[in-house]
Image 1 (spheres, rainbow, N blue to C red):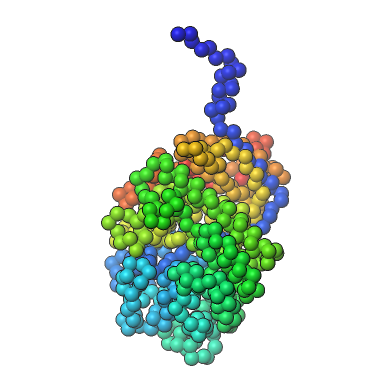
Image 2: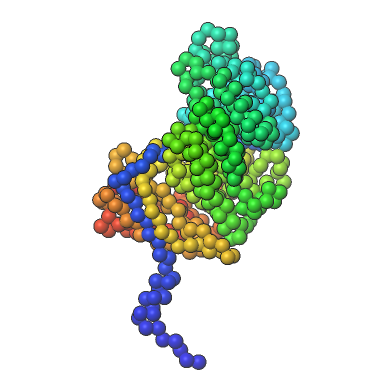
Length: 513
């Protein structure tokens, strides 16, 4: 057999072909809009062990707690600097009656949680407990009001109970129950999934109902409500258009829900652990579909709100898989892998890119449910890979979005393709630039040339990376730090150009000056 001799030119060409060609241009002297910190909101529903056991254990628990909330979870969430926390649902919100959750706990009624496992809801966490949690977390409350099974009067009374600082009967009842000073509550959701579990309403009907409820959602004692209408999910653009057209002047935002279902089948969503590249790729591809969905909902809103006064509130998002084997299927308990972390980082990039319209969002959910930040088991607690992504992305809170043009190689699998890279660049008040970049490829590292225009680059600092050795790598209670951040040194700086070398399935964060 004749040997093939490679000339130096052929060797060079082979090297070029084998090396991914990626480029990024950041225009550092042309900041756009502010990236609202509220894009990084959380969501805690009365669902499974998301609240009870995950956050609340009660004052008498042998798990260390403050006023009933477990200290380890509160400490971890506080480190994320979460800007808002949505409660009590979700579907649970439209069967929740706030008076069930006030007064002595041993006298509160016991209800059936018909949406999530038909378990008993003892109402141990009500208004006062939840507001105490927001104080411990130093976060803003986002209250979802009951429109599906509640009344206008019930909602109006709840607002007065929480926010009126005068001498009304409801304000004095709040004082009797232990809270003298009125709370500040900005974010107020009027219904949840009113097209489905929140009442199975038609768009025209809900738009009229929203106008009525919004009329009686009053501002008391200097508390300025930010009223969020119930939007639809996925590609149901007609609902958004109808509700904004008919009720837009009464709202500050309209919600959008989108869950990443790797298989595309609600009845068989795919596993959250022990999967291969097929499920890895499918999950990432479905997650990236958020960009088209946000774009098209925003375009519909532009017809009636071209100045973008009304925000798009993506207040439920994340990957939804089949429940873990042996768990109550109504508890929506799943594991959390490096794949899910990259779905989070790329979704947050999408929100940042659309932050002129997307100004509030809430991942589902905070603890033990769906794409959680934290998992608990009795006294044990761990931080998921998704937690670390949210920790990385704190740098973008309230920073100015910078134009970022990305030319990237494709990640191809089974005849389909997605971009290999995703990223966000932002600028702080001190002039420093924050950069987060994700390499989605399952097996190939990526080198990217970053050209920063309009600023001189002198140094890189605070560089960290999150990666793993397998597409389904997870943290467990036996090995809680298997997927955890490490310092990142895969970069060089020369003449205002930054070269990054990203391992497969990784996300990095760094600061540039």
